[in-house]
Image 1 (cartoon, rainbow, N blue to C red):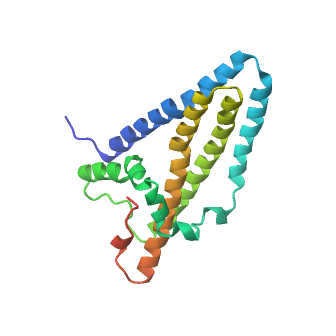
Image 2: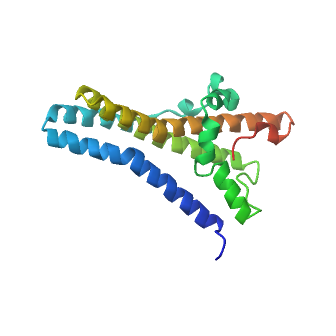
Length: 198
């Protein structure tokens, strides 16, 4: 049996994460809409749909919104929230990258110094997408509370935090680490002192 290559490792990791997202967040949302539809209560459904449309405003977030703020410097605030443990499990995180390096020892997340801007741009796109989904998930949670389904509201809230809010925090953490890495390099200090990108 051939050992997995980098492409198959990425594919398997992607399938695992995709399955978790569908099962843990999308499926409860779809089931919620089924319940609301069958309940024959159009007012909560219409109000919820209109509120969910507001999620598209995340497309217009200005560039300055994605710049790390002072309290985010170095990413320590996110590390206190357990973001490094969360990062380990994600695609392009340390566990996946370690598995790829076993299959391909030459693999590196950052091969050149000028790879950093491209990585930062990818984190901005990922964060923007998760903001859209996160805001989209808030109205159904509130609607479930209004309809008297607190346990289901709690399920929607927890799944939205896991699937969208924590990935948002992860992207901001990575950009804070990129800024720290660039500052270390400009100061002539070793790049390893700003680890945390892989």
